[in-house]
Amino acid sequence: MPLSEFTRKLVETKLVKYCSGRIPEHSRHQVRLTYKIRGNSVSLIEERPYFKDPSIWTQSPVAQFRFDDQTKKWSLYCRDRNAKWHFFRTFKPNADFDDLLKEVDMDQTGIFWG
Image 1: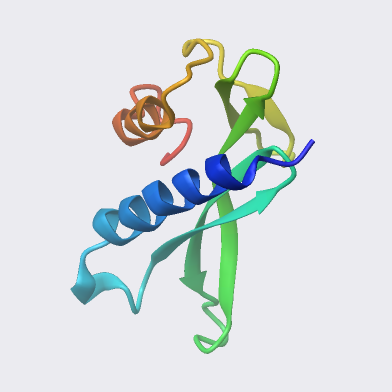
Image 2 (image 1 turned 135 degrees about the vertical axis):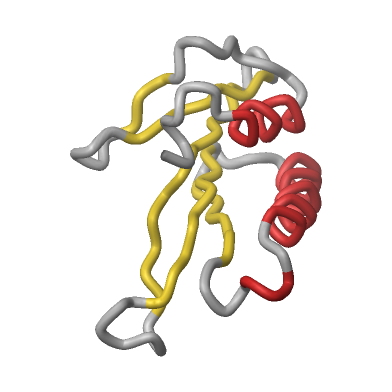
């Protein structure tokens, strides 16, 4: 089920602020953060210029957030080397989207930012 319009706008507002704040202005020609919303999931994506043709930007998913409409909580997912998403077990589902962004930011395991 897709996110409600209210939830979608709230998440978009938070992600625009997060993505622009995470990458310094002077580095945005080398790396940028963006996101995609599909149904009830939101993917955080890192983009970098393709090394053979810098005019083309490549995308690498960093984290995925999934909203459970019944519990009204977000779950955090990480990606493996085979591009499959897995529930990030060290972080319990949470109603506060900001807490998920903080967890990705801290990245104590190195699973999101390497």
